[in-house]
Every structure is written in structure tokens, then in C-alpha cells.
Length: 60
Image (cartoon, rainbow, N blue to C red):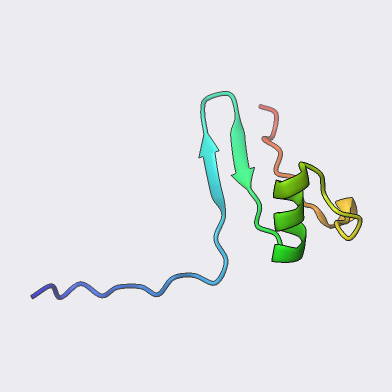
């Protein structure tokens, strides 16, 4: 028997891939936005650029 506790899945999660030079962060969208964007290759008019948050590596 395994006595280790299993933590519940978090409601929100950041998914990303990174290399020494780049970080790619994956963003989830409501189905009405995400499906249309995936199908047409463009965001629909209901998508608002001002609602985005950018993650930028600080300069050293």
C-alpha cells in the first residue's frame, strides 16, 4: 500500500516549454475563442489584446 498523499489537481496551471534562449507559455481560451482561432488561424473579434499578460525575462 502506498501511504503518500495525492494532491488534487490545481484549478489553474501554467504550462510552458523552455530552452536556454526562449520560453514558450501555452494559454488556454474559452471554447468560443480557442476553437475558432484553431480553425481559422486568427482570433475572433471577441478576443481582446488588452487582456493578455506578457512574461518577459529580466535583463541581467
